[in-house]
Image: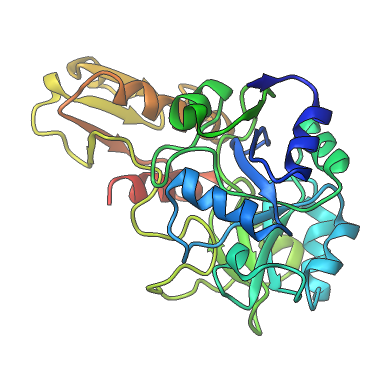
Length: 308
């Protein structure tokens, strides 16, 4: 059922139901983070492995302290600078959170989203909401309500419509679970902006067999069609490129993320463009990366994981 009022959606979450809701990044599949049975439904509906932790969404920064056992000064500094917004902080968890939310880890991922409907929904719910992206596991993330509905269908009772997502890429994830802040996932806030706010460089962790935060699996955000750096037969393949390409007419289908070379526009268009190409029954999709700086790092990260 598609609902337009946040009250109905918030009431559903309070009663242990799942709700698809909009954020500025992608649509989320939410459950009461304090209700382990409701959170278990998220993993079941999404088909998500239990070793992959969830992000807990709250309406205000003052709702974070009960969820964590420590809130380092540098993490508070980032929260003050970038919340509400597409930044997730990984902090030592408190005992109030069920282990299933954090995949048994000693840390929890938390953020305050920027979307006005998400904030209203969270305020009315009055509980922290654990939510991954509202799609089947490893598929392309949803940036419109239609994307989420086509992926999850009647597995979810309540859909809260908030229009197209403004950012279109998942949040950047920074961990404070160790001595130095770690960049666990590139996302809607560039690495450079976070380092400027911290006045120090972020460490990049070595590859780990189990993810420390969402979106860290090698294969993720993937369409059905095979993605490659060079198409075998362009006339039967699609092209996904950051900006205008001289040979784009030689492909069966073409998606240009931003002809004016805007990282923000390209990020907002990425998942919808992948979905459109995937619906054309192409033999493969050739990808051409964005410049490797700013939001380009996050765009390229998603393309590499989608093609893994």
